[in-house]
Image 1 (cartoon, helix red, strand yellow):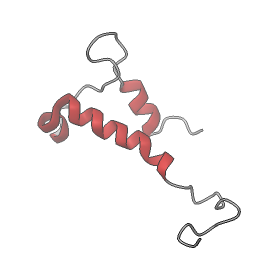
Image 2: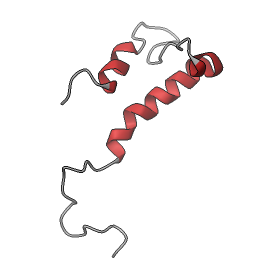
Image 3: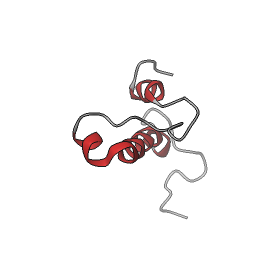
Image 4: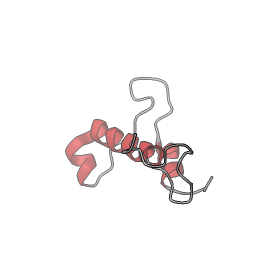
Length: 72
C-alpha cells in the first residue's frame, strides 16, 4: 500500500482522544471548515476514505464469469 497519500493524512488527523470528538476530524480554517464545522469536515473525510473501495482499479481484471454487470 502506498504511504503518505490522502488516506494516511486523513487517518493521522483523526481525533483519537476519548470523548465526544473521538473518531471525528477537526474543522479546518478554509471554506468547508468555516461553513460546515466538525460535521461537514468529518463527512467529507469519510467520503474521501470510502471512495477507493467503491471503484475497481484500472490495473485489475473484472471478476470471472460475468465481466459486464449489465448483461445477465
